[in-house]
Length: 372
Length: 165
Figure 1 (tube, rainbow over the protein chains, first blue to last red):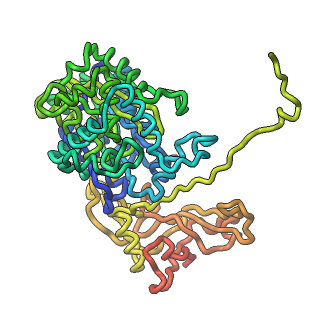
Figure 2 (cartoon, rainbow over the protein chains, first blue to last red):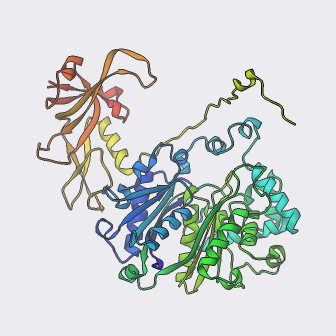
Figure 3 (cartoon, rainbow over the protein chains, first blue to last red):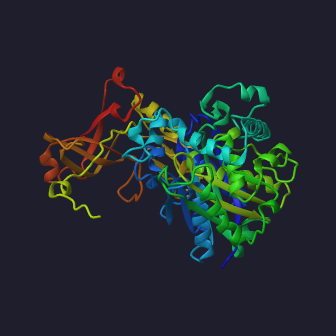
C-alpha cells in the first residue's frame, strides 16, 4: 500500500462572478497553476488518471463529465467523474494510488454559480420530490435552521457564539487573496442583522462563489519527483447519513462523525486536539462548531469563548477564513478547504484536518488528515 | 392483524408531477466571445496552437493535445467540405416535420483531406433530402450563407446555413 501525497495545487477565481472566463477556461487556468506547483510537470505524459467532481444541475449541462478531460490535460486519457464534493474525489484519487492502479492522479472541481439564474430552485431539485418539495417551504435555509436550533439546544451554543464564529472567519479571510466576503465586523454588527431563518442572519450564511481547484496526487515512489515537501494524506473517509430529513440525525453532524472515525483510524490519530489546524465547512456559522464537535472536540462553546479556535491559539479553526469569507464553490468546497490547509501547512505547521460537507439538503461529508 | 389489499388498491399508483425551474446564463468565455463577435462581422475565427499548429474552430484558449495555451487568432474561410450530413424528420419536441432538417459537419478551409483534426463547424446544410439520401452531399464544397449585416447578433445563427457552391 503506497502512501499518497499532495504534490501540487492550483486555483482560479474565488470571485462572485468570473464574468470573463468560461468554466472550462477557469479549469485550464487552475490546472496550469497546479502543474507549475508540481515542479512544472507535463500532464500529457506524467499523469495516469484524472478525476473531476461535479453535478449536472450545477453545471446546467447533462452528462457534464464529457467536458471534464480536455481543460485539465486529460483528453483521450482515463478520466472519471465523482458526482460529489471534491473531498470525495480526493478519496477516489487516494484509492487509485493506494491500490496500485495509478501513480499520479489529478483531482479537479469547479463551480460557476454565477451562471445559475434560479439558484434556490436548483437546490430545491435536490429535495425529496414526493413531499418535501410539495411542502413549499419559503427558502432552503430552513433545514439549516432546524439543524442549528437542535444543535444549540443540545450544546448550549448561543447566538453570541455564532456571531463570534462569523467575526473570526470573516476577519481571517482578509489575509488571503481569495475571500470576496471577508470583512471586519463587530459583535453589534452581527447581532443587529435581520434574521433569514432563526438563528441565522445574512452574515451567518456563506454565499456561493465561482472558482476552480486542481490537486495533483502522487504515490510515495513518485511524489518527490514533483515536490520536495509533499503533504501526505494519512487518512481519508466519507459518509452519508439518511437522505430523509426525519430519519437523518439533526443537530449533530453524524456523517462527519462516521467519516472522521474512518480517517482518524487510518491515520492512527489518537485525538483531534493533536493537529495544528482544522479546516471545516462553515457555510453556516453554527456548522463550524457542529463539525468541530463531530471531529471529536468536546465542549465547543466553552472552547470558542476561551479563544481556543482562534489563530495563534491551541487549535486554529479555519484560520484562512473558511467559506464565510471565501464563499463556497459548490462541489469544489471540500477542495477549497484542502487548499487552505495546504497553504497553511506550507507556512510551517506539520498537520491539519479537513472536514467537508456537501451542503443543503445533504447529510454527506468527508474528512482528510494531512501531515508533513 | 392482517389487512389484505383490495384488488383496486393494487392498481392505484401515486405519482407527483413537478416542473423544474432551471435557468442558466452560460459565460461564453474569452475564446468563444471573440468567436461570436467575429461572426457578427462575417468572419470565422479560430485559435492556433504554437506547438502543434492545430487550429481550433470553434476556438479554445488551450490545445487539448499539447496542454498549452493557444496564442494566435487566425481567420479561416467560410467555405469547406461536407464531412457528414443527416436528415431528421423528427423535431426536438418529437413532432413530425413536413420537411426534414438537414445538418452536418463541415471541414473549413484552409485544411486538407489528410488532416486528422481540422477547423470545423456543425451547422445546417441547405440541400435537398435526396442529396443526403443519395450521399451526393458528402465531400461537396459548401459556403456559409450569412444573414444580412444588420440582422447579425453575435450568434452561430448569424450563419443561416451552408450551401453548395
